[in-house]
Length: 549
Image 1 (cartoon, helix red, strand yellow):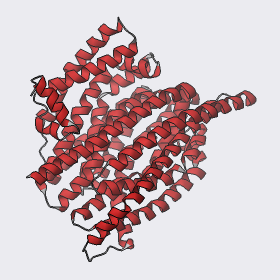
Image 2 (cartoon, helix red, strand yellow):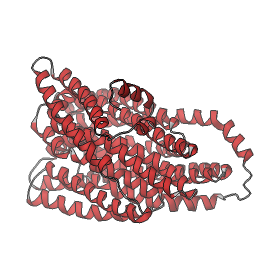
Image 3 (cartoon, rainbow, N blue to C red):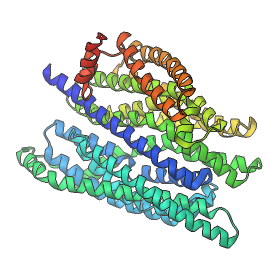
Image 4 (spheres, rainbow, N blue to C red):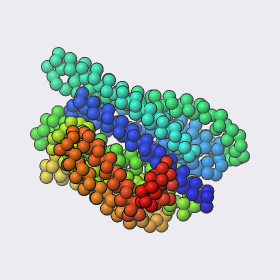
């Protein structure tokens, strides 16, 4: 019993640590995107986003699935005491990552003009894409090392490397964007054009991505060297006679990675297809290429940037869930599988639902605080699309759950079905209804909703899982609604007395406290839940002091 509780606690704590780190990294991302946006403008953000959409797909093909696949394979072998084979998985994966990374990097660099101009209808984004290409090799290797440590049951290397990566990304992006934007401005003055400054500025922004990955990788390599003695000691204790050959490892890797790549690629390719379809139809309807880039810059650089912050919770819980589910399956522990699924979904909903409500009630003040933008478009996008944070978080997490319980092909099928319906709906809303960038938001909501429904059905059938509703969805929603009313009223009253920035920060802080109190009073969270969280005993002491438990 004690072992089960320790395993359960470690699962939530590891996931919570990674979730908090992911949120911190997303917040750093928002902070540096503020000066970056001020430097390169919405048009530059459009080019920046276009390059990143292509880069993200190439990253999926080369390395994005590697941490999940490696952690799953390593975790299953560690659960059986096969430390030697776990390490061979690690070494084989590094070779695989190097080959895949170099191949995709070369394709991206030499195909940048075609990918940016022909495919995405934004030729000026090719500068940024070429700068991103070498990063694909570094990301592939880094993904393997992160996956290996996650498979061993520790998220700490991933946590610190993510923070280092994001800090270096932030610093280099802003500095490089400033200098390259200035250089592009001189070119524009010389050639009597106007597009080089935002295009070169966007390229400078992407330079920070490569610098961040490089520093994160160096940190992980140093850590791996320091940990080598411990690994060797564990390998010497391993009495397993069966040794997996590298040819077998490559085969297992490919069979594990391909479904993950397909599901993740289909799941994320909607972004690149959305932008390509949006650009072509908007230009066809008479909107200039630069204005189209500016509209997409608002969508990606403001709306999407903010809504992606809560999704860090789901991504982190997904990364933590996959190896723990694989371990539970390897031990034939069906009850542990169901508990981990329930815990990860409930924890994610408790955090993400109030974020969606907050985006709805104070969308414009948040945008004014971060971007000094009081225009109507980004605020309306954020209000309309706030529900997508909940749906995307749940669909992302359930993707990871299905992968963790060896239903690798199911997310592929579900994503393909959702993508076809999503694209058909987007085309109708763009071409016939002419809803512009609002159509992209509505279509994305539809995509995430379909994924949630299909994944939920698949999980229920696969492990006979019954989703708990009251404490997972109803109570957090009720608490979040009351919190939303309180946040709006607090902001409205404070705004008359202090600046917008202070009013927003105080309203958010007060709202967080109110939400936590309501969760406790409505029995949406228990002492057992708090004990499984990092520093949970502090929250318990505070709650008991105010007689909330």
